[in-house]
Length: 481
Ligand code: 4AD
Ligand code: MG
Image (cartoon, rainbow, N blue to C red; front, top):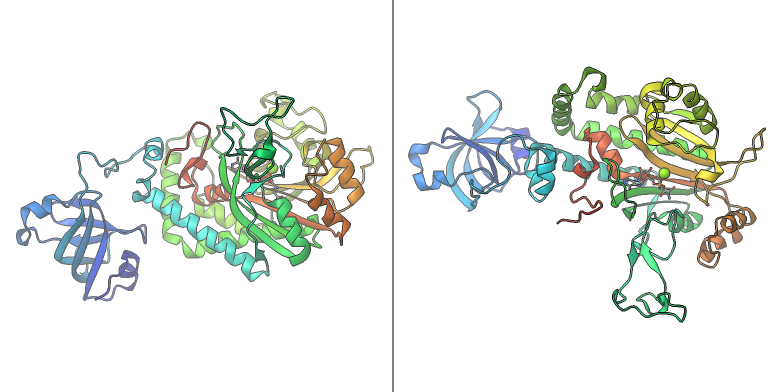
C-alpha cells in the first residue's frame, strides 16, 4: 500500500480501499474528527478516530500542527462537507506540535502576524493556495515560452552594468568595509575588489538578453532582480522575480501582441489547473471586501476578473492620448490628484495609471510612445511629432488594482543614435562596449519587455500586498528568514 496525497484520495475516491497518508493536523474536533492536510490541495481529508480504541495519551498528542501518519479505510463519508473520509486503523505521531506555543491556531490570523511567521504561514489555506498558484504560474510561463520557440536564458545576477540607468543598485563587494583600499584621491580602489571592478546585483537581465536575442532569435529570462529603491509600498520589493522575453526582428506592435498573448495564455492555464485554489481565494477576497465601503468593492469577483483579462483585448493608448484624458479628468480639474497633470512630458504617477485603468478604461491598458526624457536610454527613438516632441517606442501595461505590470520597448538599434543618447545621459561607452557591439555587427530591430512576476501573482490571487505573494519578502528594513 503506497502513500497517496490528499489530492489523489479526494479525486479518485474509489471506496472502500485501504490507504496510508501523512500530513499535518489542521483541527481535531470532538476527540474524533481530524482534518488532515498535506499541502497537495486546499482541501483537508477527514480522518475519523474511534476514540474508545485509542490510547488517551496518543489522542492528546493529535494537536493542530502535529505531523501524523494514518492508515485506515477510505469510505464514503457519512457526514456533510466531504465525499470520502478515512476510518483510522493506526495512527502514529511523527512530530508533536505544542498547542501552547504553536503560532498557527485554527482561527483567523492577520496577514501582518503571518508575515512574522512566514516560515509557517503556508500551513494556512490562504498562503498554501497563493503559493500553489505561484508555482503553477511559473510553470505556465515556462510552458508558454517553450511552446513558442523561446530559449530560456540565465542572465548573471552579479553585473557590472546598470541596465535601467536608475542607479538603484545593491553593491556587491568583499572589500573590508571598515578599511577599504584607497586610490590616491581617497576614493575606493575597486581594482582590488573581488571582480576587479565595481559590481552590483542586477536590476534587469535585459541587456544580456538582448545579446542572446541577436543570435538565438527568441529568448527569455525568469529570475530574481534587485532594486535598492526605498519604496515601502504594497507593490514594491527589493528582491523580485522578473520575466523578460527579448525577440529579434520584432517591433513595438509585435511586442504588445506578444505580451498580451502571453498574459492571456498563462492566466487561462491557471483557470484550468487551479480551480479549487482560485475558488477559495475568490471567497476570501469577497469576505475581505465586505469590510470595505461599497464604493471600494470591485464589481467583479476574482475569477471574473481573470476571465475578463483572458477574453478581452487590452486597450492600446498612446501617452499623448492618455495625457489628454488625464488633463480633462475630474480629479485633475478638481485638484484631487497629488500630482496635477498640466503639460505633455509629465511622468505618470500610480494615481494617474490607476485612474486610466480603473475609472476610465476599466480594463488592462497598454500605454505606448512615452516622452523620451522620462524613459531609459536604450529605447528606440521615434521621429519627432508635428510639434517637435520626442518620444520613444516604450510600452507599459497597466492592470486594474495593480498598476504597472509590464515595462518594455523596442530597442534602439542604430549605433549613432544610441551613442548620442548615452553621451547625453553620461553613460560610459566603455562599460557597455559589448552592448554597442550588437549595433555594430548585424544590428536589427528587436524588442522585449519585463513582467514583474509578483504583480502577476497578486492579480491572479487577489492578494493586496506584494509581501504576501513571495515566500520571504525583502523590503527596506526587513530580511528575516
Ligand atoms: O519597468 P521596469 O523597470 O523595466 C525593466 O527593468 C526593463 N529592463 C524590462 C525589459 O524591457 N526587459 O520593470 C519591469 C517590471 C515592472 O513593470 C514591474 O511589474 C516590475 O518589473 N517591478 C517591480 N516589481 C516589484 N518590486 C519592484 N521594486 C519592481 N520594480 C519593477
Ligand atoms: Mg517601468
